[in-house]
Length: 219
Image (tube, rainbow, N blue to C red; front, side, top):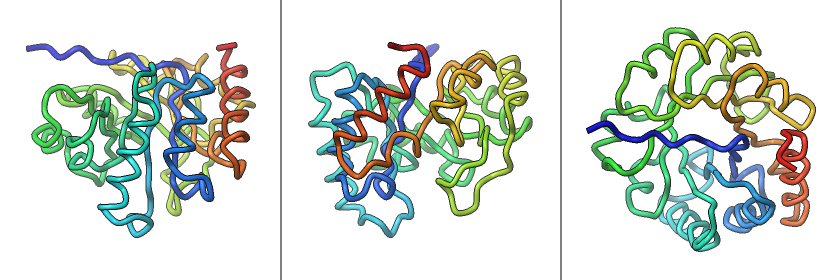
């Protein structure tokens, strides 16, 4: 059976627990969803930041916040927790569970995204039937990781668009200043963390989301 792959909206928010602090993860998600963000990935790194029990509770609370709305939630890395809650998908990195193993955990209904950083990884993701969404990056320098991968640039986004027919998400250093460039390079969607999560209050996070959507031509 051919699985229908979800097409991401132009903005794919990453709600990072550490970057959002002191705003709780679920409250940050609610602010983004209230501003019109329709895909939000929940992220808690390093793993020591939250225990498995606390992460489950935070994700469960976020699910309640968007229940009955068009916003769909993804979870970074944790296919075990994603399988237990009403999520749209799980996003994997190159050092996480391989997509085939994650699929056995989450079942057929959840989508699987995979981060890629070079041509070989993009081609492997394109060939993997379990991968529904291909992410490429970092496009620009990013401060969201302690050891970021090598910057790939806009030309790589354009190459990746030609290399895969799967939905393509670009990530890394994307802000109101460059979001239109990334979309013009061929990305279906842009994943944004820093430009959304910082602000210290849920009101500021909502304003960040509105500014980003306007810069992407969505308002």
